[in-house]
Amino acid sequence: MSGCTTTLYRLIHKDPHLLNKISRTSLSETPLHISALVGHLDFSRALLHLKPQLAIELDTHRRCPLHLASAEGHIEITQALLYANDNTCLIRDQDGRIPLHYAAMRGRVEVVRELIVARPESTRVVLEIDGEETILHLCVKYNQLEALKLLVESVSDEGEFLNSKDHEGGNTILHLAVMLKQIETVKYLLSVSKVKEGADALNWMGFTALELLEHHSRDFKSFIIRNILMDANLKSGNEQNNFPPPSATIVDHRESTKLARSSKKRRKWFKYQGDWIEETRGALMVVATVITTITFQPAVSPPGGVWQTNVNDTSQGFGCNPNNTCAAGTSVLGSTSDFDMFICFNTISFTASVCIIFLLISGLPLKNKFFMGLSTFAMCTTLIFLAFAYLEAIFLVVRDYHIYPTLERVGASNGHIYKAMGNPHL
Image (cartoon, rainbow, N blue to C red; front, side):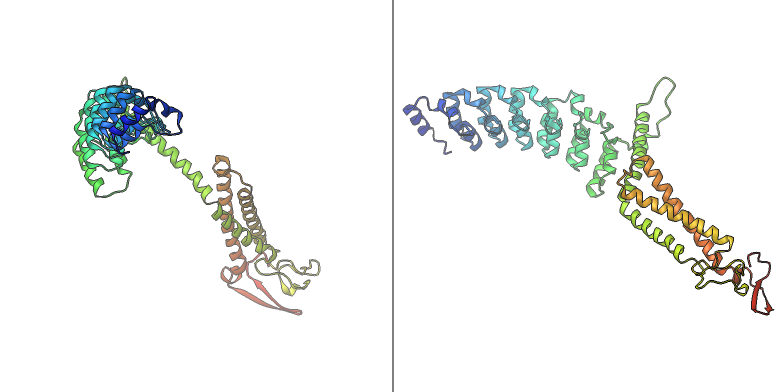
């Protein structure tokens, strides 16, 4: 911890096998891990001279001393560790990261340069645990522009690597910089010819970098980045649709991409309808219950009321006579044909609303196309026939006063009879 080499040599003189006994202890770190982390250069060199094997020892997180030195930016200790064993550049820790990843994440530019010189192939190591991200994605994610510039320069002739996509969303480093609204990073990436050539690449959502910006929140940074992209002659999806139609022998890749994207949007729209029905299950239950209550009420209390006593007096009208007694509890308007239509419409509406309630409480998947169609049909049927029943009820109650206003009052020996002129029902 103090980096005292004098004490180290004194301990080694007392016990020459002291460093060899480290592996038999319960310590999670070697002395070289601690000295590389703290930055004791002389102590680290002494340990490497006494036992070079310490350079590849791993702690409980499977990190070697080079991981720690790289993260902290100790350039001279990094050089000493690389001189002892440069294979440590490719050692992965438990998160799949190598020392170069830690140096890039923390913006240790000098350390990044040393690691690239020692093992150039380390720049191609992807982070499988983090979704197969490259080190370029890592630099953008942690906003380390200087480290990104150094790494891009080292692989500037590899367009495929510069435009590689991550596994999580299919985003290139330009996509990622636009999403994170890193203005300087976007400017730099568009200055790299290989990156600019692949700027119209689509991620897994079917968006270019410019289209991706349009689907995020609008603010001043978004406005600046959009202008940068437009100045670089990048086009959005709407502008890309203005290309001439493909010939009979050549298929325009952008046109096929456009069709695929529109197909995805249509499928998403149809899927959303299913989600809408599922999300409104509670609201549908309330509506269906209310309609069921409304349509049940006329069954026990029909329009015009019910006869309170048995009536067989022709003076009461409505078809009551000695041969046809109007029984108590039956509908006063029940002898009319319009009442039959009202009952028919009301019953259909009641039955359809009950069917909706059954579908909702049964737990059936409403996202299923069949049950979704059945629910929609039942709800439409309920509302339509409820409207018809309302119109018939209005007609039954008010027709004699609005449709047939002219009444002839005729006297009779047993009372007064009101005869509607031209009405076949009375």
